Length: 71
Picture 1 (cartoon, one colour):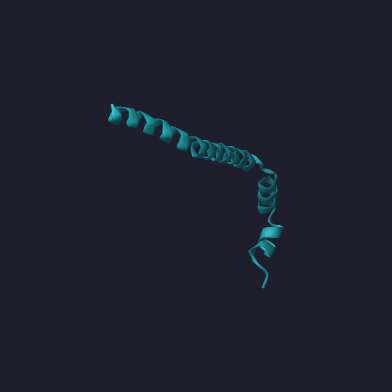
Picture 2 (picture 1 turned 135 degrees about the horizontal axis):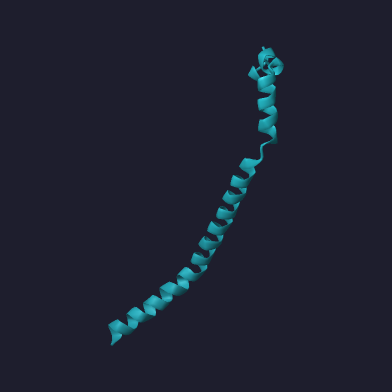
């Protein structure tokens, strides 16, 4: 028995055919995907920068802490 997409009701029904055509032509989801990809790239850059700079910031605070504890 074929799946539901091969049902004679779905193939022969003009309303379902129009719905399928509109669904396949609709590209509004592409914009959401593009924004999600941009947000992902920005997050990756932020994580990379924090990973690289994190050690330097820690060292700077440690030097400041050493000055206060030594003096």
